[in-house]
Image 1 (spheres, each protein chain N blue to C red):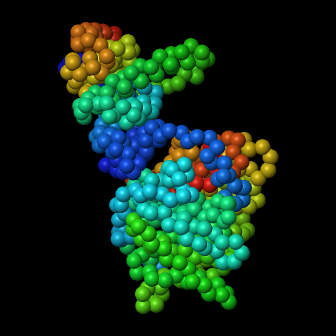
Image 2 (cartoon, each protein chain N blue to C red):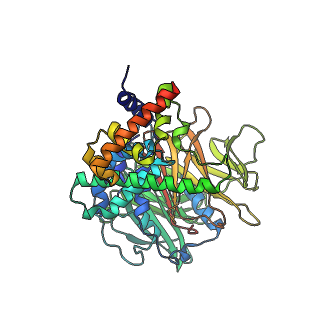
Image 3 (tube, rainbow over the protein chains, first blue to last red):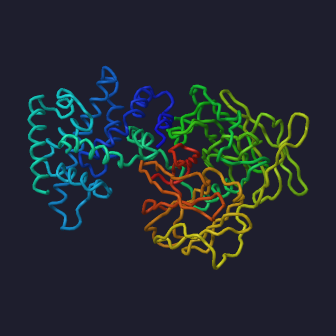
Length: 173
Length: 386
């Protein structure tokens, strides 16, 4: 993946896009992976939409950290909305024609598959909190900003999520 | 025994390493931020399919001049790729509503020159633009005759180290392209007739633009000379549609669709593609031994009857892994390339296009190598907006 070359496709004179291009180069893979780990059926679509919204909003963001936090929160929101949409679609779709998440097509180690299957079974908020905590190593405050909840809610979501995971894995064993 | 936290971290890290990453992601993201152009702005670009095909054919008919033209490990010379000038104001009649200007932001002055051999004069507008997603430039041109727009095209204009000139566009009666610094004059040599071509310079031009006019269907040579009058390169000018017989065996299937099966053959060192839906095939006069980064961007529609499907297809240099087309509506079409004949250095690509179209649509086609670098681009400003 030639991320170093992605910035070259700028509109001449487009300062906003120019400002975002460096961030895109540095953070796009991370945002795609975040959407993927949150169970998005099209993680690149989610990440690209998040950066497109950043370009439209960029002038109102105070610094690079704020921009990263904005994109991360947008990825979480869009993925959550996508899950809601897919649930509606599934209610209207005959069995066997569900839209699969891209994660189902990947071959992983068996023990990792068990962990990820248990993670996928968690409520969306707990899954988000756990991915942000254990994959991105974010602080409770950063996770709260990404999820749009209080740090206390993050703490309980992580705690309950871990307990549910442990329970699910024990039952599987 | 690992803790649940350790197992989580390991599983998430492994899973994340499998996430898809599209090489044209930035381009796709920018496309989401562009306002859609107002309807009606493109009506003057709609032309008959045959005319659009002629534009493509004449571009594909242009061949490479002296010297090796290889992308693999090729050293780029000091030609057009050195462009770095700021955008400049555009004179009438080109405005920011024009498709090419919108797609490929200019980095030079737009120069207007008169061309044509006899009868009604043609007006040619030429300028350089930045290749989106890549490091080089594209040379853009519009050809007008009276009020008719005959050609509107941008194509990769990078010259390689030992290249004298490269063709990038034209119409049935003219060809143009970028030339190296050593070129001081251009001549068109046809049987029983010799005429001067033109070398065009402009503010912000990273290279001179050559232009040669000729009668439709001419066969001959375009000769490039240095300041001392020595020939430094030549371009074979061939008729647009030579028609070899279609072989029965040995082809490579490029695509299968409602348009039939399209099969590519290597005949006389040139790529030829036929579809079972039409008796006429595409014949590139560009030698297969020196394939362009991206060429033969074709648009297939059934010759008669209702148009229920369409297909973009073509061939590319062996280092092109993926081709992405962006239509005027912003819709993206992506195709992975498939290998051509062993050792040919050619790959094929095809992607279903939109339904209900009757002419070649406007598009930007980008060629990506395996590392995600843009290595070629073709922009067509003619045709239907879909």
